[in-house]
Image (cartoon, rainbow, N blue to C red; front, side, top):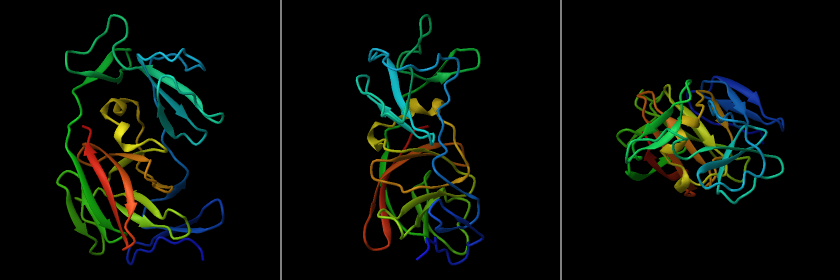
Length: 241
């Protein structure tokens, strides 16, 4: 059977994946693979074996552009490229007490932020029929089209061992952390992300994390998705900014 994301109303365009399977999207174009890229402004290019410097944040980027945060003493896989950036201020630059660096501006100055909001929540969505407003936690049913409050819903791909796919809605943008657990993603990564408004057709596994910037400009992380066997997915989410 060809792959099909079945939405009763929103079927507008179809594409084929690398295996020739038909993928049907409700609206925007579907791009196979992961579009997340890591942008590090004003920093030197990463090199292998930086001595495991614990003052740096370390990550690995695979050829598809997905990012995996690792520990200071860990190594990237053979197919990945290492990158790293300061976890705190560079020489002569420090963030105010209680804040941390999230990136660098075009002049090489630190961009600082307060600690992440601590609210952690869990929700359950029915495949294709329910979406969530992350700002309020409201679960909203699909009456022909998801209303503007909905930030994302789950699509179902029955041709994969893990059928869960996250599709953003109504102007929300996402960055996909492939193989990066929910619990280790915090607001310190926000300044390093490039978000996309395109739909990303990849399985959303339990050890993946999706960072979502809503149309209201707030940033959330979503992860730990579990298919319940009753046409629904339970997941965790938390506000980062």
